Length: 192
Image 1 (tube, one colour):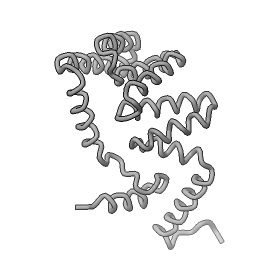
Image 2: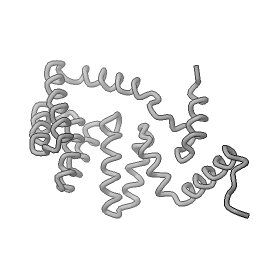
Image 3: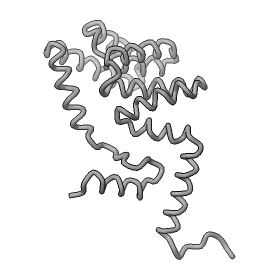
């Protein structure tokens, strides 16, 4: 069985554009179990189950393009458990898709505040807020959000930070070229 370090080395070899040690899926199950346990302790189980069901309905509606129904389901989940961060994060996505960027940012700020900047909902909210800020040409704000998301385990945020850093991007490009030459030592780089 491969160790975490073995998987990190293999990930770097096969996907050199990701930072060393960025292993997709590593520890996600443990994080989800811990978050579910923490939520279960904070909210009444029946109410939590109802809210999660509303969120799933909202996600399904959004995926099928029915943003009105999605927003209704997420808003109902928020009405039932206004102190739970996840529904705010989900509603922010639907609001952004509808073009309500200001509303999306309000919900993302609420999700981050309610989660105290920890856990899966916070991580997703930082990523999403970083994307909006990047589109608004607020590079430093986007960088700060992605740094926080990366610390919470987001591989996507780590990749975005690499893209924002021209030196890192250049190093990754050089590493890709070197690995390409190592994989194909007899290949021709052009006609000589």
